[in-house]
Image (cartoon, rainbow, N blue to C red; front, side, top):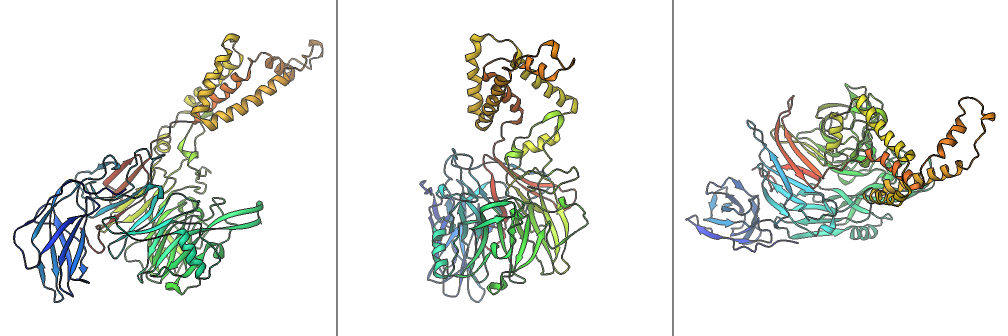
Length: 638
């Protein structure tokens, strides 16, 4: 729900200015003011604002399409007084200024501001601008934290958007050329749904449409397929069209290695004109081989970024579950949709300076072009998550499932979970020669999803680690010596043997149900597995113990294994509770408490070794996508 500025915010006129006269009013967002001013035809109006009459910040200029122009002023801290004045620029370039006005902001919804901590090393300055943060909710979302916020370089909240959180997460939120924000609201990965919404800075909805409406438009336009969900990204084109990223389902029969019917979820792109009419589309099913599925079905491609290449009018699509970035022949809406190239492991490019497949990116996010790219030699930034990274020097493959890495454990005699890592990375891509070279990267804690890599206007590197797995990092740094690991496993074995064979009074046997219930309650899957294993073992013990013992005269030798095993089985405690508890106890080292959800946003210098410039740590939420922007307004640098 939106929080109205219920406080009596102070608005007053101070001093003398030119002939123009404006007024300042509150909006539904307590951090946003509405500045209205009379503007002659052919002129534009912008608003300077700041903590004093030196101002220091400015909005975009709004053309006069009516006698009165309204400018939304955003970028102010909570519970603070700001000064602001309108700047009128006439057609001949001359300027005129309104009187100064004072405006006192309110506060964000109480108790719902994300928990954040900022690190600002001395001797360096972060890049000017703002950080636009899109966050995921914590499990069950008990605190109901805000999910879209903007921060200044000091880590202070200067804007937020509150929405019905049942709609999901902003996947992502983007600043449009008209000064509005565009977002995809979606709450899953493979399920149906998705909503596209355009808002102004005050949080007022300008336009929106759902996946059901999109499917209606597709049907009217003559398309026979339907979108399952609008998800992960959306792109505004220079001509005002929208490239909408959707997924769609298709059934296949008897695919190699998959008998019967397989439901496959692939990605598609829909080009909507200014009237939301579909005028072009592309489907992964028409242009990619469904038999290449390194991260298995049903989520075959899992696109997460769509970008427009202004140099040639084509589209670049990041396919996480293919570990590919592909260029599509879009040709500004006139292309055939052919795949121009596939960048990544087993694609069309040669990775220069490397012979290891592990040096490619895997399960990547946020593929984006750098400033000044050309169609032949460009720089491309990605966040390389590393899921299913091809075997490294040790022959291990990083798991693709979060559960495989969130609970690192010491298995028998010192064997470890394979080392996993993620990295923000920049590649130089030569399209003509089909070569690529790694230009910059930095190893960071493993983040199995999400992430951003981008270059700031000061040439610093900015990256977002969506959910750094500190436990994986810690197990990598604190591996137990082999002797300690061996002793640990022997201790567990001794406990199991004691539980199996130590004589326990029968009066205590009913109490064995207590730890069993606790284990099942705390670890449902583990507990049920332990019950199943325990019952099987107990049944085997019961059956084998009925076998008659062989007399000494028919022993086959001093080491009659079968006879000795039966004799041992007869000494095992009954009933099965003990077997269940023993098995469950032996599994417990696998399970460590899961770290609280967190995210980390970092700015470092480009040169080696990289120097930390700015770091934001977010607790209790993961970051879907956090990006650096020059300001809250298009074409304005703060």
